[in-house]
Every structure is written in structure tokens, then in C-alpha cells.
Image 1 (tube, chains in turn purple, blue):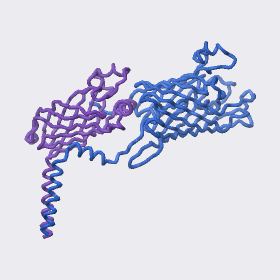
Image 2: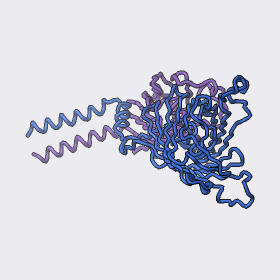
Image 3: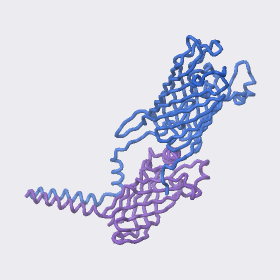
Image 4: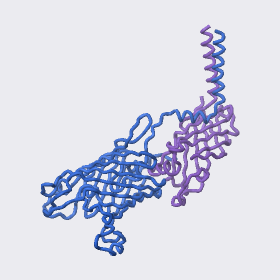
Length: 185
Length: 314
């Protein structure tokens, strides 16, 4: 009798794993932004390579969380300003996205190729939540699925205060590139 | 037994369903919150100086910082009356000490600097960050740095055969700082000044000790009020100078400042009772008595340049 119990328990564990297997997760999502007015300059650009992303295949749901302190700059003073004066990262430690991939289906993961779709949902940044919609490109190659999403945000949308002295050097809309690679299994 | 199996199945199925229903972002947030994070305190002070004295802050790794600082004449000289006003409270009194320095951080714990001031005076220093204030798995209540400076006097000496090593003096300081809140930080600075040479005199000494305290109170994100007080502990009374005449130094130095961070530069405007531009002068040979009129206006201006690429951005 005990064996049956164990067996059943095991079966359920396996089953629940099967359910979980439909969720892909990565801990090294790349988020890059370049607020320079002249995009060929990258002096204010920054990148975080420590975002966490999950994709639930059946429901097309995606979520992304980026700890703000993982954004690093080439100038230590800029990084300090980013944390202390602009994004107040002690108070708002994470940027998040929660939404759906429209036009995604799990068959795409099974076959190499490039697919286009769009993501829709909400972005939370600096304590402000905004609706979000942007085109997404998916490249499936062997065991990896790469989602890229290039979009733009405006600082004032997220209540980020840019002093008048700095404003002329920055573009009105900051381009952001998200690059998320899931390892398929 | 059957009951038990059914119970187990129920429990299992509950978990599976719970897993399936949970919201994705909620899981990420929970996972993130459960991580033990090491929170390293940053920006204890705005700049690598509080006012006169160095702060525990260091120029960022791979950055070159240029600092220029000025100390003008005394605000109000007794008996000069309106001349003081005409001299714009010391701003154009014909007296100003300029201090210019470059410093570079090779790592986030080592900073090297070079400076020049006054009458052919040169300084070089090394600053080591020993402890960083932090909370998390490891708790460190203070930041600690060691500042070691060498000063060389290259001005025309009293005699041509005066030995080179007589012209060197040294400053060693411990910088012990704590950021108490987002806006309030304090720093304790015990220091020792060593002169290779002092003129003969029963009270003259090569080693001079000093204790100082400095602090910052933020007003807004970009502005702050700062203060400093230092007290010389020995070697200021009844000294003899090179020409064997008696000198008395004033052991107390008080300074009040205002920090303004414009985004690229940091301006520090201050009033200080010391008019010397070097730390050694301020800590061991201050001649200005603590009187309102003796205070002089001054400023530090910082600019740092990112020299080394730290992050690969595309």
C-alpha cells in the first residue's frame, strides 16, 4: 500500500513537472538603452544583463523583472545619478513588464525560423505603470529562442525628472532594446 | 490508507493547479524578494571632498577627476571698514589660494592623485577604500578609507644647501564615515601630520595629531549643506619659526558649505576659517582665529571623465 502511495506521489510530481515544462525562464535577459540625442554616441548608454523573464507557452503570457541596480554605465558618476537622482532605485528597485505575446504559438518553438509578433501589457517603472505595446521578433534556432523587442519610452511618461541643463543632450524618446534568450529543452 | 492516498492526491493536484494559476510576474517578484541582497551604501557624500578634507567617497573606477579649488581672502579685516566691501568680502582682496588636482581610480578601492598649489607646492596621494557600509548577509555599519598624502615644498628655500628631504611632509588620515539616512552622513577623521624637518624649538614637534568631524545634510537631490570642524591636539602653542620668532597657531578650524550637483560638475561653495589650501596647512598651521570676520569664501569644482570602458554597450 505504501508503495502505491509513493508511486502516486511520484506520478503527480512528474505530472506537475510536465506542466512546468511549458514555462521557460531565463535569468540573463539583456536590456539596453541609449538616451543620447545623437544615437551614434553611447556615453549615456547603459545595459543590464540580469533581467529575469518567464514565458508560459500555453497562455502566451510573459513577464520580465529587471532589478534597477543591475544597470551599469561607463561612468560611475552617471550610474550614481541614475540611481540617486533620476530613478530613485532604493525606493523603486525593479522595472517590470507583464503581458501577452500576440501572434505567438508553441509550434514556432519547434521549428527554426524568424517570426514576428507583438507584445501587449503593462510596464512598471519608477513607480508608474503604463500600458505597453510593441512589435517583437522571435528567432528560433535549435535549442534557443531569442525574443527581441525595440521600443521607445518618454521620461515624462514615467515621472522621471530631467534637469533643464541635461535635457538638450538627451533625445526626447529613449530607445530601449530588450534581448531575451530562452533555452528550450 | 485509501483516505491517505486520496488526501495526497488532493494535495498534489492542488499544488499543480496552484502552479498553473499563479501569475507569472508575481512569481518573479517573489523570487526576487526572497533573494538575500547585499545592499552597498552609495553616495555617502556628493564628492571626494566634504569641504577642506577628503571624504570617504572615491572617484569611480576608471574615472579621471579634475578638481580646482579656490580660497579667497578673509571676509572682514578689522579696521579696514569699507575697503572690505570694496574687496567684495575677500573675493578681490588680491589674495587667493588655488589648489588643482587630478586623480584617477584604477580599481574601486584604490585612488591616486596629484596636486599643485600656492608657491610651488606639490602633493601626491593614495587613497584606499577598506570597508564599504552595507547591509544584507554581511552587515558593515561604516565605510572606512585610508588616505596617505605626501607634500613637497619646491619654493625657493632659505639657503641653497638646504636638503631635499627637509622639504617633505606627510599626512595620514583614517576616514570613518556612516550614512545615517538618505540625507544625513557623518565622517570622523583622525589624522597625523609628519614634518621631516621642523625648526629648533622646545615646543616644536615633527608629529602633529588632529581630530576632525564632517557632515552632510541633503536639502534636495542635488543640493546639500556641509560642515566641518577640526581640532589640533598638539604642537600649536609657543613654537619657534625659522627666524626664531615665536608663533602660535589656532587649533580650531570651522567650515560651512553648500554642495550643488549640476549633473556633470559638482560645485561646493564654502566659508572656512582656514585660508590654507592644503590639508597639512589647515590641520597643523592654521593662523586664523575663530572670528566671523576671519572666515573666507571658497569653492571646489569637480569634473570627472570616464576614461576606461567598464561596460560593453553594444
